[in-house]
Amino acid sequence: MLDSFMFGNKVNFKKAKIPSKKNLVGKYAVLEPIKINKHSKDLYINFLKDNKNRIWNYLPYGPFKSYGSFKKWLRSFCLGKDPFFYAIYAKRHGEYCGMASYLRITPDHGTIEVGHINYSPILQNTAEGTEAMYLMMKNAFEALGNRRYEWKCNNLNTASKNAAKRLGFKFEGVFRQMFVFKERNRNSSGFSIIDKELKKLKKKYLRFLKPAHANIEYSNGDTTAGEAIRYAVKKQRNPVAPITPMKII
Image (cartoon, rainbow, N blue to C red; front, side, top):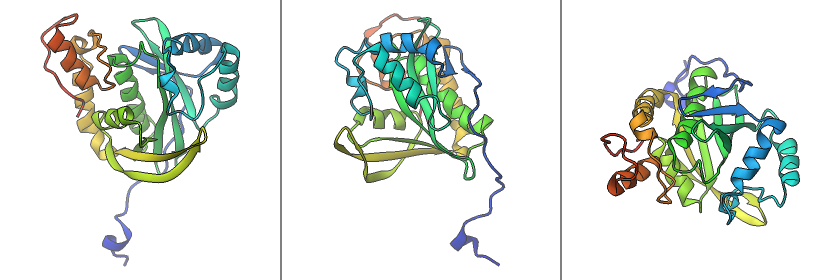
């Protein structure tokens, strides 16, 4: 008989599903699988609102000099099964103002990663942006049946690392010399959430996404929802109800 201490515990797992063309619908945001003619113009216009192009710093592509080149990139890179891209629609703005994808999709082992996250300035530091990440996490576990949900980012990208931690991901280590992007070395920080952690995290996300939190606009430059709420309360900006400052975790 195999020793479970040496070989690992047996698991009742068959296979995860691959992402479908189904929209992911929340209270404040909707994630729609990329459609070039429907989404490209809004996305391009809203990405231009970052006039210093900082949103592209840690991505392996962009910025794009024209709408035509952006549309060409969408067509060549964003219509496949892996990575599987969504456009993020913010109901408050009535516009598509961000993108994110599933990638490294491995149904046999039940692992999937979230990445290629790119938020226009009007989506950054908002409940819509947080809800988009919640919808993708929830779908990865509950609808697709994955065991493990990953987040990787450039180890120099402090904002992304902080966001991962505050969204409930646990730091696992640094993958050295993992990529060469834009003629520069990239060491990647790795984070994960596993299926048994979902129940506790869901409660915290749902608490955060109550209307009293979601109706606050905040812009202190921090990419984390918890810090932004603290800032909004401190400055008494657009108060809608008494709020207990909180992080997702």
